Length: 281
Image (cartoon, rainbow, N blue to C red):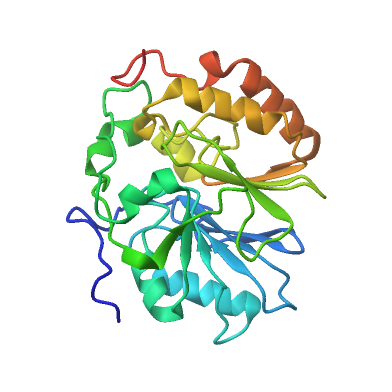
């Protein structure tokens, strides 16, 4: 075990879940979405091929569930080539230390996200005053201290290429965090969104629990730059994706995705940006 890897001092189990927790969905033959409590991880790769990667690393204390799901899909003892992070918020890196130690694999993230992943900088405080429901109000309990991955994490290539995924490119989609990225495959216009937009109103406890499907912007309580977030959604909408796997909520595809994403890009100020909150200009 690499003793130099560590979570922040505020790392803790978060007692939140949804009806989709423990559910896996094969969105495409080589795109698999799995829900851990309230967040999704994505496995990219055909189960018949040993070449696959993991997108994001789930909630705190979820390593055993992730390893079990990986082995269920790809075979006992199999491991991804790398972990690719959309960003470094607690619900996307919650099991990453255990996964690195178990699999001995590299991690990649945008260069602007590295300070949060190498012990240098903590995320802005969550905003419990922002417009929204119970999840917003309890957001101060969410971990924001930087984690320490040392030299096990590297910056994504500047040219947009994605390690081990030659058909994908990464797209800088800041707003929710400075180095937030999404992943896009041109040939079938498949999109891995992270939290640039989501398909559930993440601020409202009832909707999180029931996973009521509804396109929305990034989670309000942890989004400090709404202008950048809107630009990111417009950038993703311009790609005309055929399927999108978001960090929270169910995958969306086809005409449902096209109509909803177009509406979100056009009416982001009404749908996504809260009416009040400390990060609202």
